[in-house]
Length: 125
Image (cartoon, rainbow, N blue to C red; front, side, top):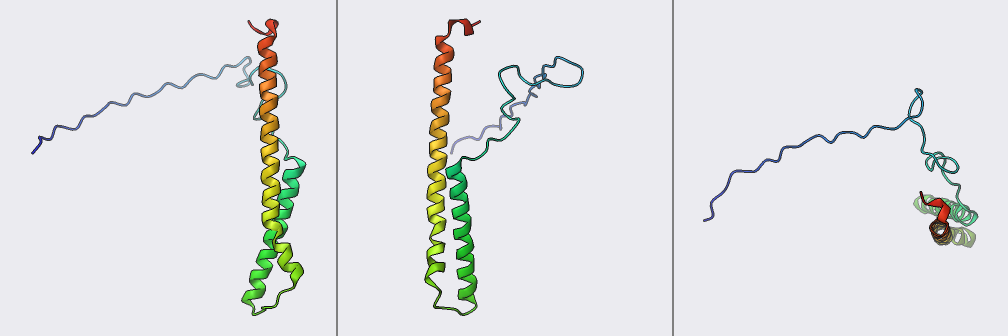
C-alpha cells in the first residue's frame, strides 16, 4: 500500500492591479487612436441579419399560434399558417448567412488594414 503524503499548499499571492493611465484629473482617458473607442457603440446589424431576425420571429409566432390552436382542439389548421411556420428555419438560415458574410467582410477589412499598416514605413515608431 503506498504511503500518503501530506497535502501541499501553494500560497496564493494577490496580483497587483495595473493602474489605468489618465491624462487629466477627471478620470481615466480612452486610448488614443483613430475614431471612437471600440466599446463606445455596438455596430448595427446588416440588412440580411435584420431580415433573418424578422422572418424568424414571424415563424416562431406562427409556431406558437399553431400550438395554442392544437391545444384548444383544432386539428385542421389552414395551409397558410403551416407555411408561415416554415419562416422560422428560413429566417434562421438567412440570419446565419448574413452573420457569416459580415464576419468575412470584417476579417478582410482587418487583414487589409493590417497589411496597409505593415507596408507603410511611416507608421512604425
